[in-house]
Structure formats: structure tokens, C-alpha cells
Image (cartoon, rainbow, N blue to C red):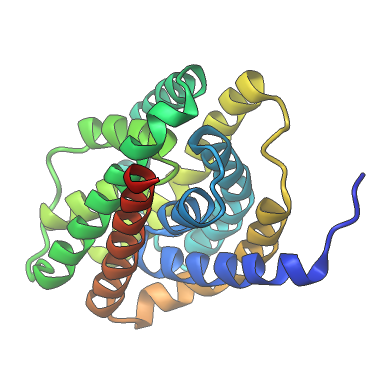
Length: 253
């Protein structure tokens, strides 16, 4: 096994830690932040980036899900309504991404991530003041799982945000979506491993894994105390600018 350069590992540990803190507090953003970094900054192919991020998320979402359950942040009825559609969508998206050429998928993935960034900005400025039981759940799980696998992230932004738009209670929505995500990432990772082998294990993935697992227990605590609006806006700005710059580089180069 090749030696891991600690100096090269540290930035990814910090990114993984920050991304998971935000993800735990908002129920979104680990995948999109990490995928944006891998694809736009390091030039990793979209399928490999998505595979690597989801391998990391198998661990981070497992720890985060247990932590949310301990803090009673999980709505179990909503959990089971999201679970099966999410897994079906995730496996389908992973399979399609593996079979497509990276040069074809890269601009589409970055455009999707930029759109997610803009959507998070919109969500930050239109945070719902009223809470009620969401009606549209299963289609959100299916679409969120598919886009999460195909874009390297998006389960939280698609599912959590839309549930909140419908008036779902923020704390239990964030905890539930994070808990379902463990089973989603596990099924997506298995699909990627079958299609790609273990090529997704890189220094970046190891760093993201260490940082993400260290931060996961703190996310559930922040979900109770942090104001989501400010973080939504900041994450939206970062994702939008980074993704648009990557698209610009792709077409100029």
C-alpha cells in the first residue's frame, strides 16, 4: 500500500470536518461540498468522485444517524417513507454515472451542483415559518437518491429542503433525512464498487473520511442550536461560485 502524505491529507481532513458539521446541522451539504472540491479543484472524474464521497458517507452518516437517534431527532414514520424510494433512486443514478464517459458527465454534474447552490441560497432567504406534516415524500426520496448518486451529492438539499418547504419540523426532518442517508450511501457505494472496483480510495477520500467521522457526533448537537438560515446562505454561495468557476474552466480549456 502506498505511503500517505500527511501534509496532503490535512486539507481534506479539514474539508471533511467542516462539510460534516454543516451536513449534521442542516441535513445537507457533505456530498455537494466534497464533490465540488474533488471534481472542480482536483479534476477527479465525476463517477470516481461520487463513489469516493459515498464511501466516506457510509461511515459519517452511520455515526450521524446513531447520534440523531440518541438525541430523538428521528421521525420513524417519515424514515420508512423515504427509505425504499431513496435506495431505488440511488442505485439507478450510480449505475448510469458508471456507464457514462467522464468528459460527458463533468459539465452536467457541475451545472447540477451550481443549481443546488442557487437553490440553497433561495432556501436560506425563504425559510418556512410554519410547520405541518409533509404530503409529498416518496417522489422526493426517489429523485433525491438519483440526483445524489449522479451528482455526487444532493440527497439533503433535495429532500430536506423540499420537506421544509412543505412545513416539516426542522429538527426531526434533518435527523430523519440524515439517518436514511446511511442506507442510501451504502447501496450507492456497493453499486459503484461493482462498476468501478476500489479505484475510489484516494488520499482525498481518506482525509474526508477522517474529518467527517470526527465531526459527525457534533452535527446532531448543532441541529438543535444553530440558526440554519445563515449556514444555508453561506453554503449556497460557496457551491454556486465554485461550480460556476469549474464550468467556466471546462469550456475555456
